[in-house]
Amino acid sequence: MKQKTILIIDDSYTDRFIATEIIKSCNSLCNIVEIDNAQKGLDFLSSSTLLSPIIIFLDIRMPIMDGFGFLKHFDSLPKTIKNFCRIYMLSSSIDPSDFKRALDYNYVVDYLIKPPTVDSIQNIMKGNEN
Image (tube, rainbow, N blue to C red; front, top):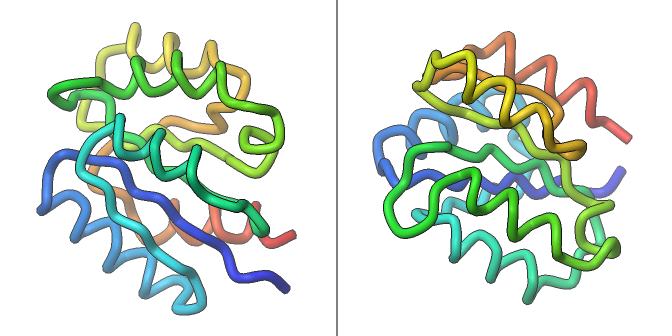
């Protein structure tokens, strides 16, 4: 089984730390990459040679470029990149319009409210075991 890469894109150090610790407790074999803004996340994906699946946990509310800006730009990336990625929104927003807007993107798998739970992360890992 190939090692998974988990990309956490969130401007909050504390939220990235919490997500990272929960992911580590669920699966220590993952390569976890923490990125503090959406543009850097796009740059990472564009410059990477993707040989294994990437799970992306994406915040909505960030300065410079928000999560929806990321999704808009992600849509224009080559299929060779997009086909390796599964995006999970990870946000403190409970606004139903944010939830609907996020899930309107085909490559957004689910919308999780911060902080993530061990159960929600375990379910994501199990659902992405291939």
